[in-house]
Structure formats: C-alpha cells, structure tokens
Image (spheres, rainbow, N blue to C red):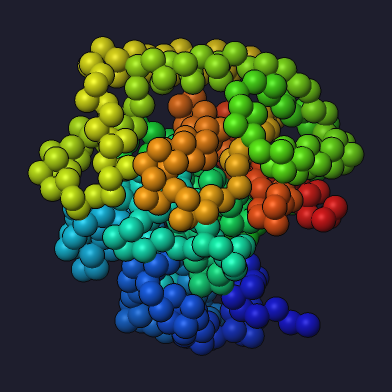
Amino acid sequence: MTKSWHDMTALELGAGIAAGQIDPVDLTDHFLARIDEVDNDHAIYVRTTPERARAEAKAASMRASDGRRIGPLDGVPVSWKDIVDSAGVPTEAGTKLMEGRTPAHDALILARASRAGMVCLGKTNLPDIAFSGLGINPAYGTPHNPHDTETPRVPGGSSAGAAVSVARGLAPIGIGSDTGGSVRIPAALNGLFGLKTTAGLVPLDGVVPLSPSLDTIGPLTRDAADANAMLAIMTGRTPYDLAGASLKSVRLLRPTNVVFDHIEAGVADAFETGVAKLAAAGATIDQAEIPEFDEITALVERHGNVISAEGYALWGELMDSQPDRIYGPIRDRFRAIRERSAADVMAVHLGMKRLSAEYLSRTAGYQAVICPTAPIVASIIADVENDPDAHNLAATQMSWNTRLGNLLGLCGTSIPCGTAQGLPVGMMLLARPFSEGALLRLSSAVERTLKAHD
C-alpha cells in the first residue's frame, strides 16, 4: 500500500517531486489542509504562512517541470520553531512578553532553506523563550503528545510544536533549537530522530536567543537521512555520506553514573534492549563511570545554571516589568540566578571548558557515548502544569541527561528505541564537537539496527 504524503520522509517526497509523481503545490496544499483539520486550536502551529508557502511551492513546481530543481528537498515543506525570524510574520518566542514582535528579515537559516527551494509552512509553538524540557505553554496552548490519545501528555520541550508537527504528519521536517535538550527531548517523547548540533555550526543570525553560549539549531525528522539533508541546507554545505554505515568495529561507551539517576524501570528496559541489539549487530559496548558527568552536574548545582544566567541577562528586565506575561515556573527558573554572583557564573563557564577537555580525553577511543535520552516518559499535563513543585521536578528529570551534551559542548542525536508504558523512548548518542558527519553516519547504522529488530 502506498504511503500517504504525510507519512513519507522528506527525501522520499523530494524524490517523488523529482520523478514527476508529486507536484509541490499539491503537496503544500495537502499539509496546509491537514494543519487546518488537525490543529484547529493552533497549539502546534501558532501561525501558518499559506501565502508564502504557496508562492514557494509554485516556484518549486515550475523548476521541477523545467528540470531545474535546486536540490533533493526542493519543493518539500518544513515547519519552523517560533524563535526563527520570518520577514513580516510575528516571531514571539512562545511568550506574551514579545507579543507583536515582527522582524523585517528572515533568519539566515530560513533564508538558506528558501534558497534551497523549501516551502515554509509556518511557525510552531514552544514554551516561553524556549526554557522548558516539558513543552507546556498555558498562554498559547500545549501541543499534546500524540502517543497517548486518552490522557493529554507533554510533548517535550522546548521544540514542542516542531516535534508534534512531524509526529502528527503536519510537516516532513520541523526545525527546533537545543540549549539543554530541546531537540532531543521532544524527539525522544514523540518517536522521532533529533539532531543536536555543535554550538557554532549552524548560524544563529535572526534566532531569538536564550543562552548564546549554548544555543544550537537542529532538525526533528523521521530518520537520520532527512536530518542530514536539512543540516546541509542550514550550514550551506554538502550532505554527509551515510551510505554503507555499519556497527562493525564501532566502540560505544555506556556510562554507569548520572544518566540513570532518575530512570524509570520501563525506560531502562527499553534502553537495555536497544543496547543488546547494537551489540548483536557488531558494536563493542563498554561500561564505565564518566567522572565529568558527576562533576558538571555538581558544578551547576553549586554555582547555578548558565542558561538561567544568560537568559536572565537578556530578558530579566522585560520579564520583571511584566511578570504576569510569562508562565510562572519558567519565570522562576530565570530568576533563580539572582541568588548567585558573577563569580558563580564565571565558575560554571570555566568549569565547563575544563571538564569538556577532560571528557574528550577520557572518551577519545569511542565513536559515541550512549544513554537514554530522557530518563522518564512523557508526563501527564494535568499533573505538572499548575503544580510548581511537580513541574520543576519533571523538568529537571526530563533534561537530566541531555544537558550534559550542552554543558560539555558536544553534538548528539536521539533515536527511537522502543517504548515504555506504550510511550516512545529515545536512545541518545553523544559525540565530539563538530563531528556531525561521523555522528550521523553512526546514527543511521544505529537507527537501521533498532528498526530491523522491532
């Protein structure tokens, strides 16, 4: 049976366009119609851009008919997290604090995607200023995790709408950001592939900042190949070669400390089952403590969160002048840094640099470190939305593992790895900075191995 367009990967859609089997205009209308039908409360897309989308699709259609396609994703739609500036369209970073903020120019990554022929469907929802691993936004609505149709659960954050747009078949690719786990967490909770890039690889020109030293942009997709193709467009480079990737002779390190501190039994079982599959496919998997994980965790506990420090420096005056226009638990996370000193902030930055070097030396013989992406499954929204203590606990647990990659300056992926309680579980791979090519190649082999044994 032929797959529906909204169930196909972005590269499959691009191949269909190239073969003359799919018209970009029809494809765009298909996704816009699905958005209208599925997202009628606008919790996933805070706004669509139908005029732009149809104009870009028409241009792609003409190129396809004339044999002038620009690349493999020419004519393929994409959703954009609402921190990515789009000319003449409000970009409000999920917060009433920035209501009405309308940039004059596209962010560089959006401009590059448009030049590559991609179709901008619109802007996706997120929690205030992208500072939450849960994805809750009482002001604009919280996209429900599609894997529990009975009880509304969190989508993961902060790239909440980006993930759900792909998981619900409302976009082939969703562009998100990751400062402490905000691509990998929603990827894991929605059964998607997520790529956290190295800070500095993808340009942030025209992206609303949260923590400039840690902010990164990355795609949420159905597989590694789509992430690879999208990364090439955003960086202006050629795609990495993923052909023939194998787990034979690959060495992976499974930490025995920190990453299992908050683990739920079902998540642990799904992860261990996945690890066994990788070993059966030829990977050598060692187990050892990684002291830097303990040290970076203690450093943040002792001196404060660098995200709070940089975010409050950027937005503190605005949120303090209008405290009721930002979700309380997120406002309080920003304000927590006020109890710290400038020396605390510097201690974290200096510690991050030292511990990153030590971590890279310790793990030099491995292609990646592997662990569960999130140690818990998607929380029930009603349990955490209006209970600050429950919210803060769940938020801490959700980003407990992913933030390690940000603080140590790594790149990483989250790959679907089974289920717990009927909900998706992700396996995270962490690799050396600026090794995205090798990481995506490895991730494609891991992805294929896990899928083959489902």
